[in-house]
Figure 1 (cartoon, rainbow, N blue to C red):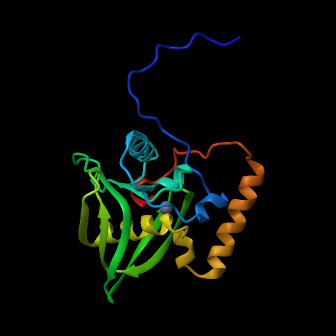
Figure 2: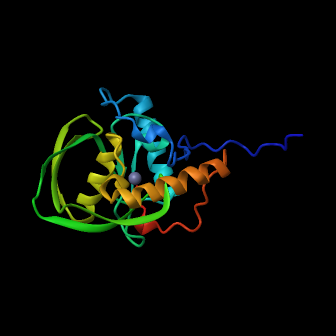
Length: 198
Ligand SMILES: [Zn+2]
Protein backbone atom coordinates (compact mmCIF):
# COMPACT_ATOMS: atom_id res chain seq x y z
CA UNK A 1 0.00 0.00 0.00
CA UNK A 2 1.20 3.45 -0.84
CA UNK A 3 0.35 6.05 1.78
CA UNK A 4 -1.55 9.09 0.57
CA UNK A 5 0.92 11.64 -0.67
CA UNK A 6 1.00 15.09 0.89
CA UNK A 7 -0.03 17.96 -1.41
CA UNK A 8 2.64 18.91 -3.92
CA UNK A 9 4.77 21.83 -2.93
CA UNK A 10 4.70 24.74 -5.32
CA UNK A 11 8.44 25.17 -5.41
CA UNK A 12 10.21 23.99 -8.52
CA UNK A 13 13.66 23.41 -7.08
CA UNK A 14 14.88 20.00 -6.06
CA UNK A 15 17.70 18.59 -4.00
CA UNK A 16 19.57 16.16 -6.24
CA UNK A 17 21.79 13.26 -5.26
CA UNK A 18 25.47 14.10 -5.08
CA UNK A 19 27.66 11.50 -6.74
CA UNK A 20 30.59 10.33 -4.67
CA UNK A 21 33.93 8.63 -5.14
CA UNK A 22 34.63 6.24 -6.89
CA UNK A 23 31.86 7.26 -9.35
CA UNK A 24 33.62 7.50 -12.71
CA UNK A 25 31.50 10.47 -13.80
CA UNK A 26 33.60 12.62 -11.46
CA UNK A 27 36.42 12.15 -13.99
CA UNK A 28 34.44 13.50 -16.94
CA UNK A 29 35.48 16.72 -18.61
CA UNK A 30 32.31 18.83 -18.61
CA UNK A 31 30.92 20.47 -21.75
CA UNK A 32 30.72 24.25 -22.08
CA UNK A 33 27.33 25.94 -21.73
CA UNK A 34 26.15 27.59 -24.95
CA UNK A 35 22.77 29.00 -23.93
CA UNK A 36 21.04 30.01 -20.74
CA UNK A 37 17.68 28.39 -21.31
CA UNK A 38 14.99 27.05 -18.99
CA UNK A 39 16.77 23.72 -18.36
CA UNK A 40 19.98 25.53 -17.47
CA UNK A 41 18.17 27.84 -15.03
CA UNK A 42 16.55 24.78 -13.49
CA UNK A 43 19.96 23.14 -13.19
CA UNK A 44 21.40 26.20 -11.43
CA UNK A 45 18.42 26.30 -9.03
CA UNK A 46 18.81 22.61 -8.24
CA UNK A 47 22.53 23.06 -7.72
CA UNK A 48 21.92 25.81 -5.14
CA UNK A 49 19.25 23.74 -3.42
CA UNK A 50 21.55 20.71 -3.32
CA UNK A 51 24.56 22.74 -2.19
CA UNK A 52 22.69 24.45 0.66
CA UNK A 53 21.11 21.17 1.77
CA UNK A 54 24.43 19.28 1.84
CA UNK A 55 25.64 21.73 3.24
CA UNK A 56 28.51 22.91 1.09
CA UNK A 57 29.96 26.22 -0.05
CA UNK A 58 30.50 25.26 -3.69
CA UNK A 59 29.20 22.77 -6.21
CA UNK A 60 30.01 21.82 -9.78
CA UNK A 61 27.24 20.43 -12.01
CA UNK A 62 29.06 17.14 -12.52
CA UNK A 63 28.67 16.48 -8.80
CA UNK A 64 24.98 15.95 -9.46
CA UNK A 65 25.85 13.96 -12.57
CA UNK A 66 25.45 16.75 -15.13
CA UNK A 67 28.62 17.23 -17.23
CA UNK A 68 28.19 20.96 -17.89
CA UNK A 69 30.63 23.69 -16.97
CA UNK A 70 28.51 25.30 -14.25
CA UNK A 71 29.62 26.15 -10.70
CA UNK A 72 27.53 27.49 -7.84
CA UNK A 73 29.05 28.99 -4.71
CA UNK A 74 28.11 30.78 -1.52
CA UNK A 75 30.88 31.73 0.86
CA UNK A 76 28.65 33.61 3.32
CA UNK A 77 29.10 32.62 6.94
CA UNK A 78 26.22 31.14 8.91
CA UNK A 79 25.08 34.46 10.40
CA UNK A 80 25.47 36.39 7.15
CA UNK A 81 22.85 36.80 4.42
CA UNK A 82 23.18 34.42 1.51
CA UNK A 83 25.60 35.37 -1.26
CA UNK A 84 24.80 33.01 -4.13
CA UNK A 85 27.25 33.16 -7.01
CA UNK A 86 27.08 31.39 -10.38
CA UNK A 87 30.02 30.80 -12.67
CA UNK A 88 29.30 29.55 -16.18
CA UNK A 89 32.20 28.17 -18.23
CA UNK A 90 34.71 29.37 -15.60
CA UNK A 91 38.34 29.35 -16.58
CA UNK A 92 41.50 30.25 -14.69
CA UNK A 93 43.40 32.84 -16.73
CA UNK A 94 46.17 33.69 -14.28
CA UNK A 95 47.63 32.25 -11.11
CA UNK A 96 50.00 33.83 -8.59
CA UNK A 97 53.40 32.31 -7.90
CA UNK A 98 52.64 32.67 -4.22
CA UNK A 99 50.80 29.66 -2.84
CA UNK A 100 48.42 29.08 0.05
CA UNK A 101 47.57 25.90 1.93
CA UNK A 102 44.02 25.20 2.98
CA UNK A 103 42.34 22.14 4.45
CA UNK A 104 39.92 21.02 1.76
CA UNK A 105 37.03 18.64 1.70
CA UNK A 106 34.59 17.69 -1.02
CA UNK A 107 30.91 16.78 -1.07
CA UNK A 108 31.86 13.97 -3.46
CA UNK A 109 34.49 12.65 -1.04
CA UNK A 110 32.55 12.92 2.23
CA UNK A 111 34.31 13.13 5.57
CA UNK A 112 37.80 13.29 4.17
CA UNK A 113 39.91 16.40 4.65
CA UNK A 114 43.45 17.11 3.61
CA UNK A 115 45.68 20.13 3.23
CA UNK A 116 46.06 21.25 -0.37
CA UNK A 117 48.54 23.82 -1.64
CA UNK A 118 47.39 25.94 -4.57
CA UNK A 119 48.15 29.37 -6.02
CA UNK A 120 47.13 31.98 -3.46
CA UNK A 121 45.48 34.28 -6.01
CA UNK A 122 43.80 33.56 -9.31
CA UNK A 123 42.09 35.44 -12.06
CA UNK A 124 39.00 33.70 -13.41
CA UNK A 125 36.91 34.54 -16.44
CA UNK A 126 33.38 33.23 -16.69
CA UNK A 127 29.91 34.03 -17.97
CA UNK A 128 27.08 35.23 -15.77
CA UNK A 129 23.46 34.10 -16.15
CA UNK A 130 22.99 36.66 -18.94
CA UNK A 131 25.97 35.07 -20.73
CA UNK A 132 27.89 38.33 -20.17
CA UNK A 133 31.64 37.79 -19.87
CA UNK A 134 32.98 38.55 -16.40
CA UNK A 135 36.41 38.39 -14.83
CA UNK A 136 37.38 38.39 -11.19
CA UNK A 137 40.57 38.31 -9.24
CA UNK A 138 40.26 36.20 -6.13
CA UNK A 139 42.35 35.27 -3.14
CA UNK A 140 41.82 33.38 0.10
CA UNK A 141 38.86 31.03 0.38
CA UNK A 142 37.29 32.30 -2.87
CA UNK A 143 40.49 31.51 -4.81
CA UNK A 144 40.70 28.03 -3.27
CA UNK A 145 37.03 27.32 -3.87
CA UNK A 146 37.14 28.54 -7.48
CA UNK A 147 40.15 26.35 -8.23
CA UNK A 148 38.53 23.35 -6.52
CA UNK A 149 35.30 23.74 -8.51
CA UNK A 150 36.96 24.52 -11.84
CA UNK A 151 39.01 21.36 -11.30
CA UNK A 152 35.69 19.46 -11.07
CA UNK A 153 34.65 20.77 -14.50
CA UNK A 154 37.87 19.23 -15.82
CA UNK A 155 37.44 15.91 -14.05
CA UNK A 156 40.08 16.77 -11.45
CA UNK A 157 39.57 16.17 -7.72
CA UNK A 158 41.35 17.75 -4.75
CA UNK A 159 42.89 14.39 -3.91
CA UNK A 160 44.84 14.71 -7.18
CA UNK A 161 46.80 17.49 -5.45
CA UNK A 162 47.89 15.36 -2.47
CA UNK A 163 50.50 12.60 -2.30
CA UNK A 164 49.90 9.40 -4.25
CA UNK A 165 50.14 7.43 -1.03
CA UNK A 166 47.31 9.41 0.59
CA UNK A 167 45.26 9.38 -2.61
CA UNK A 168 45.56 5.61 -2.96
CA UNK A 169 44.41 5.22 0.65
CA UNK A 170 41.33 7.38 0.06
CA UNK A 171 40.45 5.60 -3.18
CA UNK A 172 40.75 2.23 -1.46
CA UNK A 173 38.54 3.36 1.42
CA UNK A 174 35.81 4.70 -0.88
CA UNK A 175 35.91 1.69 -3.22
CA UNK A 176 35.46 -0.56 -0.21
CA UNK A 177 32.60 1.58 1.14
CA UNK A 178 30.89 1.62 -2.27
CA UNK A 179 30.89 -2.18 -2.33
CA UNK A 180 29.32 -2.31 1.13
CA UNK A 181 26.61 0.26 0.57
CA UNK A 182 25.40 -0.18 -2.97
CA UNK A 183 22.44 2.11 -3.45
CA UNK A 184 22.76 3.67 -0.02
CA UNK A 185 23.03 7.42 0.38
CA UNK A 186 25.88 8.81 2.45
CA UNK A 187 24.95 10.31 5.81
CA UNK A 188 25.05 14.06 5.96
CA UNK A 189 24.64 14.65 9.69
CA UNK A 190 28.29 14.47 10.70
CA UNK A 191 29.57 16.63 7.92
CA UNK A 192 31.45 19.72 8.89
CA UNK A 193 30.04 22.41 6.58
CA UNK A 194 32.96 24.79 6.74
CA UNK A 195 35.31 22.20 5.30
CA UNK A 196 33.12 20.88 2.55
CA UNK A 197 34.19 23.15 -0.21
CA UNK A 198 32.22 21.25 -2.78
ZN1 LIG B 1 34.58 19.01 -4.63
